[in-house]
Image 1 (cartoon, rainbow, N blue to C red):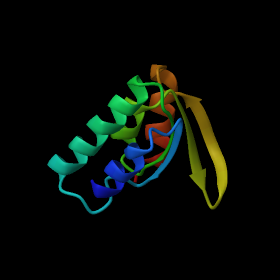
Image 2: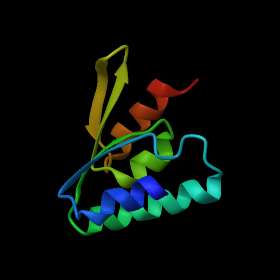
Image 3: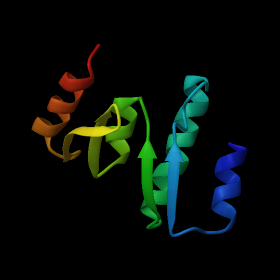
Image 4: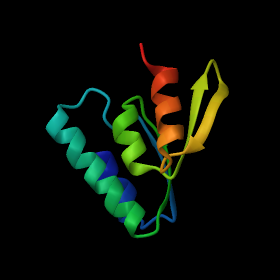
Length: 92
């Protein structure tokens, strides 16, 4: 949370956020995602790298699934068919 606060102090136009929920309790992770939602609403451009597919899809406009450094799937997070394709592609 401190890293998020530091990033917001400068009122950036764009942010690269890498795995913001990694190692956090679910309740804290949801607070982080709420902050990211607010940043998006305020017009901040956000590039988010996140393994929690459902949380990421709720935040993003577009997605890119990566495997070994290559994009294997891309889509519109607002389209049910694209969301389903992503979830099917990354399901373990």
